[in-house]
Length: 255
Image 1 (cartoon, rainbow, N blue to C red):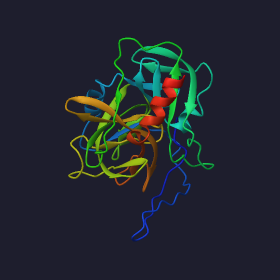
Image 2: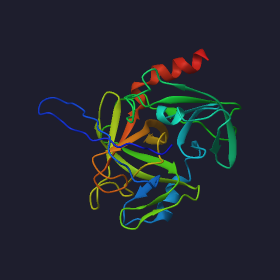
Image 3: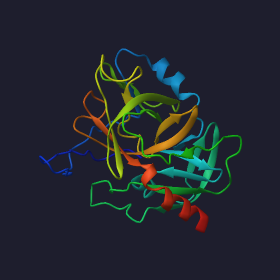
């Protein structure tokens, strides 16, 4: 799902407050943008291990969390049509249905505060290990992997149209709210070794946390704010998975 909105964050002194406003977006879509002094080969190499990250055709991302369940953004799920397909690896899997979070509908033109949805697949995905949900509350300061498909590039050379390959970059959580986590795209020499960010087209894809050698789903891509998508200074906004564990597990169990 290509993001059609951007968020601008404002803060009142002594009071944490969010002010949302609609701004025009680039007409081109992008998925993974890496720092200008790293190569696309780096992004492709980093993306190889994450086979549980799926591509919602024709445009959007998700993460397999059970053999027949995936997590995506609510605003992506709202656009999934009956009989839509998701690519995991080289295989297409039919969508049986989508379930939006009860708070997964926002004002017109804006993402919901809990931009989260579940996708049930018609048949279980085989030979791919699902990603576990992150249950901790220590996202702040952690280096996460951002994974996606689609257009790609860097702030210096611009974007290239998608070739359908999976890419990944890294970024550090610089702010964590009750329902969202925030990752800013820092210009070198600041930022992580493979600093990068998602952009329009990356909606629904994951921010993955590695802890003790194990991967966990920590965030679901929702929107961007504080700058142009894919440029230094922009901040990616992710739904904080750890705050929605109860809803995810209850919903799957009841189905």
